[in-house]
Image (cartoon, rainbow, N blue to C red):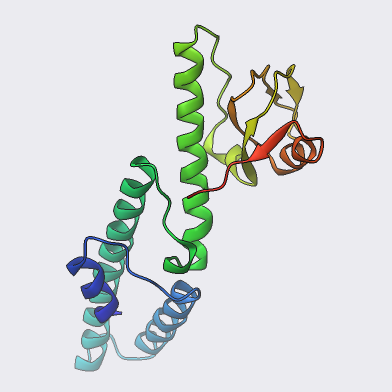
Length: 180
């Protein structure tokens, strides 16, 4: 873990992580904690375990913060981190951040075009969303989550529940917006 953290800190670019990095690390930390609990709290060995856990916590916190700062900067500059650089858990978070950026762009476009902005749901509702670009004008629709989306103009970008987005894509009314 230290070597991975060191590489990340020394590079301005996002460094690759294995898909199961966080799961593996979680297993390691759990084993360390369980072993530390079996020791007498006053023993030197227990104190060493506690110090090691504190260092792991500090390094992991810094690693995650560093990686997400880099990823966020990439997204804000118009690109998306390549999937092969990300651990599995990071991929879904990055998709959510990309969808949020698309919603901000949609809000800006609506306001600049003099249209009333569409309500943007809370973060909880953004899971299982797909970002699409509308190919034609479309009236408002009711999403599978009972929220109202639209009305839409051609070229609008929207983050819709998966089922609604797939339906519009199949009908040829929209195309999926893929991260670059």
